[in-house]
Amino acid sequence: MASVVLLAACSGNNVDIVEADTGTATATGNINNGPVQAVASSSTNPNAAALVRIEQGTTLINGNGQTVDGSNAKVTVEAFDGSASSQDKVTGTTEFTDQPVAAALADLFGKSLDTSEDVVITVASFARVNVEAEGQAIKQFSPAITIRIKTGLAQGRTVGVVSIDETTGERLFEGAASVGGNGNVVIQTDHLTDVVVVSNITGTASGSGGSTQ
Image (tube, rainbow, N blue to C red; front, side, top):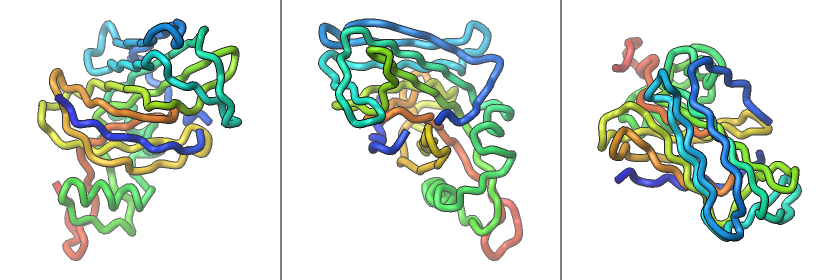
């Protein structure tokens, strides 16, 4: 069973991520009467898969902080693999310049990085989720919803979870998770964000001038 990382609320714009071989799914339903679940998978890429589940009775909140009726909710999830092209789109380039996030990932993976320099992260997978109700974009939930992302990594492996704010593009380190059965990582989030699973980080090692592996 994968450990669960709770993503705290943050303000929610779409970060441009375009990948040809993704998995996409849409589900509709009445959250007042039962759960709504969307499961995305790619027919050609087994590592592009994700699930989103909103439990019955979940409160849906729009960008103005107002509660929205969930009787006609629409959930869309897009799953991305950890290919090099996907990684470039997550980081913005082939190098990662958000130093607080880099420092936190380095600590998680036991790396000694000089985070005053650009470093490279390895993206295992990531997912994008959109929820609508009554024609309005939903930004927050109470209680948290479940996102499950396929990584292709071995069960028991420790990974980092990074969120990308949907409005500002700001990246935040959310914590560590453990890969569960079938290479899945399970995340609980009370807001909508791109959720990135990171399996490694490399860069200039402090005091050595070498590369960490």
